[in-house]
Length: 279
Ligand code: MG
Image 1 (cartoon, helix red, strand yellow):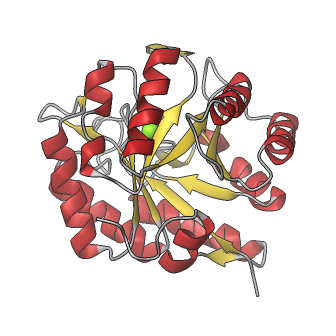
Image 2: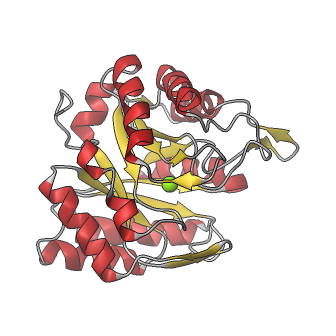
């Protein structure tokens, strides 16, 4: 049977504005609709950031709660992964929505010099996010913006702060972080296999690197991520029309490899999550 691929859709992110692409969903109603369309197109994981009334990134638990409720209602079984990151936000803000008990939460295991500022992830913040996830039975998605973060994950597993099997998200093509180079992904994936034999991973390429990184990830046995957080253009001159358009494109790429988008049940099994959402 062809390999089921978990497609994660990052519908909003903390950076793109409507001025950049009017299709970026920012209000809770837009986010629920966009998540639903992405789900129908084959996305089984929703990576979620929320915005305030001025489209600024925020961490208000009420905002997350409204979107989560809508997704529970309209996208049965879809895996919800909350962001705990972005350049803005105090450590307390970043953890404030974890008591909503999403299936997963993204945690970056180190700091990065992004073009819009330093993405601060000091050890005590990372440890606290990992502890909170463990206490609340939330599976962390380990965001890898730099090679060192893979080894930090190993140390944290050895210290009992993280529990295997892990799920990694390797981010390529971001300024100030890992470049979108095939050799880089090959090496990181090999190290993940060496150090975390039972773990799973996905990769994403930012902006114009999205398609090529998807191909590499499929070829190397990984899962994939798409969405307007990562890429707002479908070609150099044309804006993406919707998150669903990107998910359909990702699902088509799976077919090119003889694979297919995973069902919700398959995605939950692959990621080691309860088959029925635990809420
Ligand atoms: Mg994000």
